[in-house]
Length: 67
Image (tube, rainbow, N blue to C red):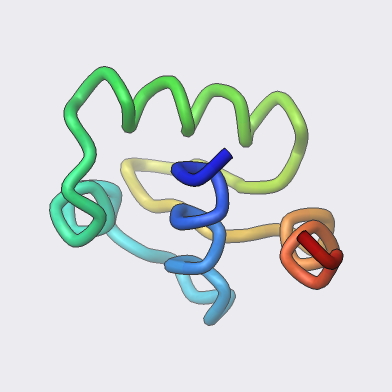
């Protein structure tokens, strides 16, 4: 869950972000990064397009929930 939260928090500006820079900033391994991306895409919490990533409204709603 920690990786999911970290990923969404890093995207909360709603801008398109470069996947490589996000991965490096969060210090995820390639495998961790891909697993998190796949999960968040399946849950419709992020959009991925041409190696750019952005949070969706569903992802923002998830971030707003109390943890």
